[in-house]
Image (cartoon, rainbow, N blue to C red):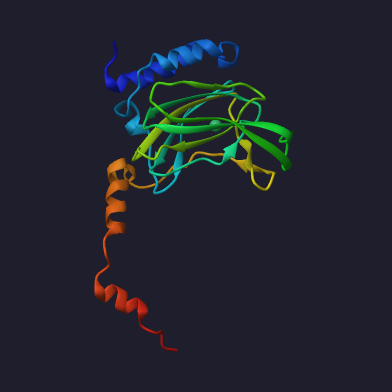
Length: 220
Ligand SMILES: [Fe+2]
């Protein structure tokens, strides 16, 4: 079999052989499930950011695109659709909570949209492949409480530049443009360890002098 570094390249090569994922949805799900990807296979391609998820573009052609999403502790997506594209989704690291929604009214363009929560799954583990078909694709994704960080692999066919996000309690849909986060700075500053260090530092009590300086009334 392949070494850790080559394993992800092998998945990309296999997708290129499939060519048009929309015509072979089971094949795509199968090759993702059998890829046995772990964090070490993708760590060089993802950058984390505190308290949110980042989009890391990997490959894009007319037929499909491949993204890795890197989730910091507590991060979750908006409730969103996939703009009529098919979507394959697989946790690579961390566990994820998933909620599926049915669109009752609207939901095809920005404006009023009534959604109903139809399914909740908790702590979906690495290797479990989800597939969303055209038209039945509104969901929410969040990193499970017990996971300090996570990575998910996404294949969208065709590529998605814009989707709808939903404010479920208010019954509204909004358009959102999507893009690569392309975070600057050295990779080590965007790894899971750096996120943990940042949380530890944020949790430290401030020195008394720091507090005093900020409480001092400003002179005019
Ligand atoms: Fe999604």
